[in-house]
Length: 344
Ligand code: ADP
Ligand code: MG
Image: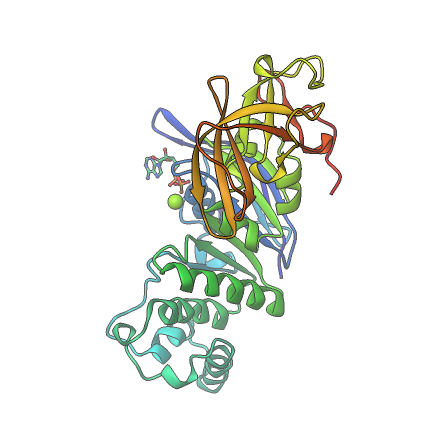
């Protein structure tokens, strides 16, 4: 399995710049997620990795080999797209084996690889069906099987689950991750869904407007967001961000702090008048069963609190909030993290 390196990769389209020098290192056998809002450059990065697009400058290395100038077929990669790209007139077996035929793999070996992949993905009973006779999840598995039989060193996936319904997405996440680990695949996976990224990744590359905002494992991204953008992008409900000027004076802060980020789940209701607490008013409630989400106000500033579902609160009520020191995320005026690393 191959490690991947991106060195100063840029991409211009006419006058506009889609990627401003992406540098990243993806260890072999790991699951890396390219995460970010629509239009931030995820697909462009993946397509440059695949060789479907050429970088304006910079280098791409796969398994230590500079593949920047090589066509897709010579890069040892397989791609799985959102729309699966299955041939409707071919059976499942022929869809899976298509690439092997094209590459003139000997028939006996092709048959063996096909049956291994089908067995692995639970497709053996479906081999004679046509794609139209499969569910979305089964079609996704056929697309995956095709990538597996190719014995690619690297598997690239662009929003592969986004056409599936919520429950199936959830199941496929687990299934894909389990498969990647069992086979030791190197996977680069594009999504705009932060929950998907958090659930699947060894490493997340968070992109914003063609730049890497933060590259980190999910836990570090959550516990120590490097920027305000990362802080707001990761976690649901989203982190609340308050200007430090709006805080009561007793709340300690670094000298150059401009913003305080607080995660909804880090806030606790304090006893009324408890020293060190912060008073807010409840604006609206959102009951979710396990949780009750309180939409609060500190002066004009919105603040979200996640409490257990059995909590009783009413709109207009005043509440006192407290939180652990290590749950304060301070940022400077440029949105860069100031607080010391949180303990996890
Ligand atoms: P994402 O996958 O993160 O949604 P993309 O990588 O598709 O974003 O696009 C990044 C930026 O590059 C966007 O501003 C998009 O409009 C632009 N872009 C993508 N493909 C092309 C293209 N073929 N020609 C011109 N601009 C493009
Ligand atoms: Mg895209």
